[in-house]
Image 1 (cartoon, rainbow, N blue to C red):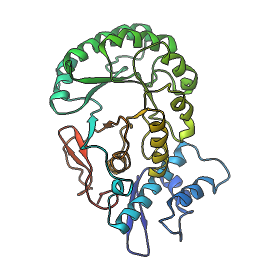
Image 2: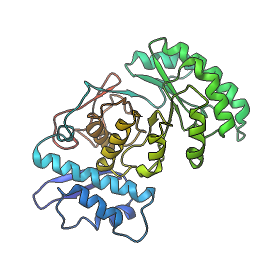
Image 3: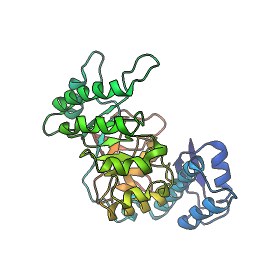
Image 4: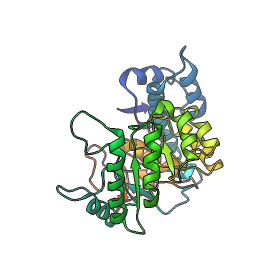
Length: 324
């Protein structure tokens, strides 16, 4: 969903996320308020209703928070990354969800093509290529390990690759697979077990494998995962916008990760939310990589949006989110 916040000063902020019902409820807390009071408005939207907000409402809150930051940047005629002390990097490295694909091409060739296109990493799904309705995790572990060997050959010594287990394995099989692929040096292993078991399984897995671990594409509030970060059980979080509640919350998450030397590799999201990620995470001093699937193709309803070239995203000097 795209949403806009209109002001009596003639400025309009753009956000992305939520659904009609959750956006309407959160928006009711904003009418007639000062859009510059972003933190106050975030807390108001969060606490004004009886039940604590779940992940769906946090998604909507994040969309409106983006739009408030967009208004502030437009009013001050500055891009959000400059309001946040400026970028610390020349560009943000990216990886595509499916790699540089092509009918009939081997996974090794696709991995090599992704590197040649300028991306930082090739990614594979541990559940991809399944046929039928039976999933044998024990056998799948062996199959995936063979594919990972081909990927390492494809990306070469200087390339990176990552794998998403997509919560398809319980702890024993997740551990088996991590150990089998350690020698191929994955950049990260994402969502190794079920989300419901992360707080129990990931700390154990961290002590049993050398593979860097990541999780969080389904997370909402930082309280879903702050203990995993504080205890250094994760190497990267996958939390993203608008899922966590917008730029206001992502800044707090970035501070938490910076404190504990944990990197941020946000999950893929819509183009407006990705523009918000570029603005709020370009100043993050730790390891950072974005999942980006649009390539260099224009987005028809956004004449101004993201600056992407050869596998990399760049900040720009357009005010606010830089999105029209």
